[in-house]
Image (cartoon, rainbow over all chains, first blue to last red; front, side):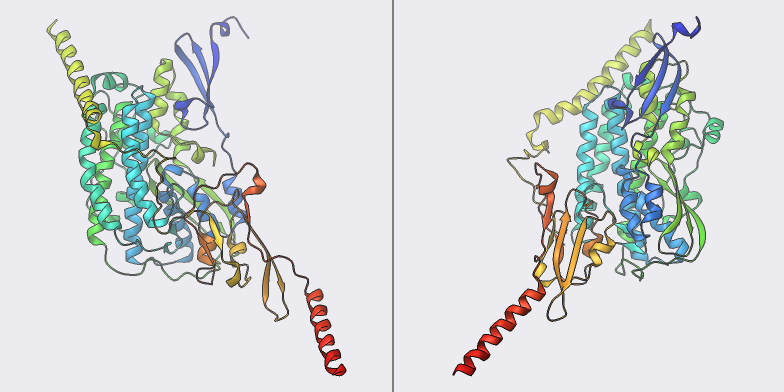
Length: 372
Length: 162
């Protein structure tokens, strides 16, 4: 240790820090209150999911995808199911596709509600967290009547969905959609346009479009930087090309484009759009099969595919190699949070310690997906 | 100076708007959403994935559930009985291992044989207590056969005596 190093102090933030959204450990080098460097250490939640994939059959891996991003299990199920379907050339019935979109978008709302709530509690406002949880509970109830589980759904399967929605689901979803816009207005009154909150986040941790590209940032964080890129629009899967929705883009309303406030606000805008999509899908829903005919033993032909889907946190990609047997030869998971985390050392240079919390919260990372 | 007061006004007004939202919930008892859990219990909807249950008397011992289980939570051992039928002598479900994915229930070819109960409170003090045993138990086929023979022999003996 040289004389120059002595003025710096190394502090561990995490792995049990409440605002690290799981078990992220950040080794923080500080000079008093100002950070001179941050180094994330990951792997505390490593369960070797990619290796497990090589040991289980294709349908057996679906429950494990629930545990990638547990706040958006439906979206992870969906991306995996689409990957295997592409390898097997399965045509998914229309009703199943619509059901998938409904579930994926409802889960996007519930995931963003947690992002909104946990971010606000990181910033010192506890009430919005409870509000977010309250609305999320409504969505959990919907999922529970649809598939029987409240967190790890395992609903979207290879070929379709596990079972058809029961009676009353559509009415309850409509009830939620009627109730939800008023709540978003409440969130905005309570938190989004609060002067203290804006002062805390505007112009903090600005990600320029070039940086966003360099680090492979996707999802709401990318769009907050002013880049209109949404896989649902650019590379439509399922029935997204038939649906009418906007892709919200950060405009720098309260400061520079791509600051923490923009990233936060993207999620509020996206919740509105998702609610709009669900409403359209409920109108499109017509009787039909909820799953394609899939044989019990899946033996895809040898080959490789890469499929990506727009998750609440960004692009989730599955790269699957098949050797013609019943088990995958290799499954690589491209987790959006991992890329989003990688920019934190760059952003957290020369900022205050309190701003580091704002940076992590605004990126909305989730650890099980990073460590997987 | 005017800017200073303007900012101050803006801050206070937005804080008060936020407070208005919370106060609205604070004074209106109808907005209460929590349930007092141990006292008030929630009834899960149909199709809820709770504890697994096996109706062992109609189980055919096909082991489809044990084979599909991604976490090997089901231990199943079958023995052929005198009618050449598979008899599930051991059927253990480790509830600590089970991830409640529902693949086994879908794989089960018999209606209402393996299904989820609505039960969701089954914590235990030891891991062993979390294993539910459904198996019919070991019945030694050889022994039962000898018993049968014995009775037959007795019958024959009785008949002979008569």
